[in-house]
Image (tube, rainbow, N blue to C red; front, side):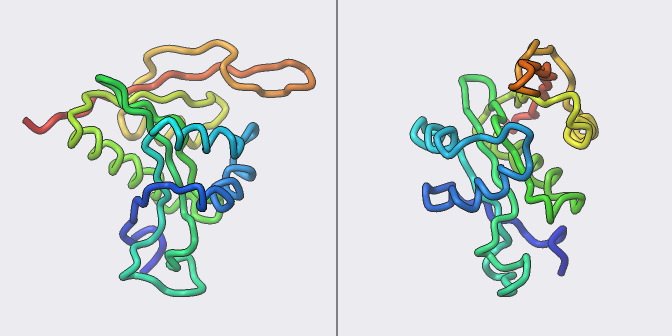
Amino acid sequence: MSEGSAELSFLPMQIADLDAVLEIESVSHLHPWTRGNFSDSLAAGHWAYCIRPQIDQAIKGSYLDPAILWAYCILFPAVDELHLLNITVSPKLRKLGLGSRMMAAIEGVAAQQYIPRIILEVRPSNIAAVTLYQKLVYEQIGMRKNYYPADPQLGIREDALVMAKSIKLEI
């Protein structure tokens, strides 16, 4: 079984997970979230998940070891939207379809919770993420000017594409 075909476990993120989360975050983003950002999200009650392979498919010492963090996401549920605040896959496990599978699971949670729309921001320079969201039928609904820091020394910032997808709710 490969990493791309293993069943995923979405486990609630705990403070004890933050070292592993920050290890991935720090090598994945130009301006990574801090421990404080993650702690604040947990304290605020955001839906925060660590993604690992299911225990029944465990292979110790491999990426199928459930002790290995594959990915994580932070979601903020609002009245009629689920705001995707952070979704990150370990660099060693990218291009295996984990992002698509995570997004499908997130869409499933939105449907189960009767939340009709998912909204997110993404850097236009993050071509892989923009391409994934477009493939998953997310549409650009706006732009946030100067949203992301790009080069703090020069004071340069990058816009954010605001993308959304309507979720079919089971009635």
